[in-house]
Length: 161
Image (cartoon, rainbow, N blue to C red; front, side, top):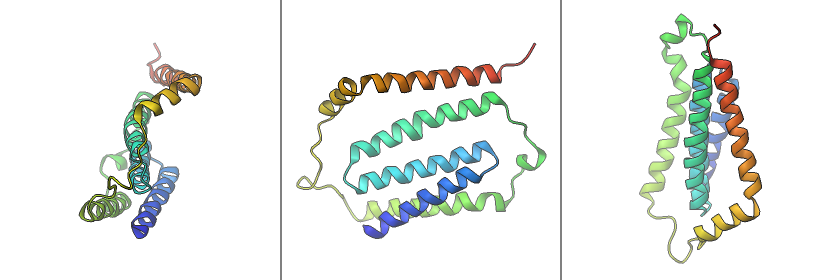
């Protein structure tokens, strides 16, 4: 499992670096999603399945949809080269995706990681109470920031009359 952990950590770091250095914004989002999925499996390996589920639902799901919506609303110019990508444009994504699928396949073949004796007995109700009672203001501030970002993307993406 240690090898799998380091392999997924390497995939997360490399895909994040590709996300930072990628010129095309949609490709950068795909690399970021790869990084988020790798982190979710790492959290699962660390016996934190609830955090892994949150990583997939919140970050790889909702935040990435917001990023893609913002990118599409800003209407980046598409060049002729970007319409027909070559194999050299696909190799990083194919390589990282293959390594990620191999790591997940190894995890599935090795059997259940969490046994009843070693499973984290964290209660979802207790976690949600803690989140919304102690950190409720922070959750609301973050949701307002996301709303402002969405409104800003709509404003920037609208056509000038």
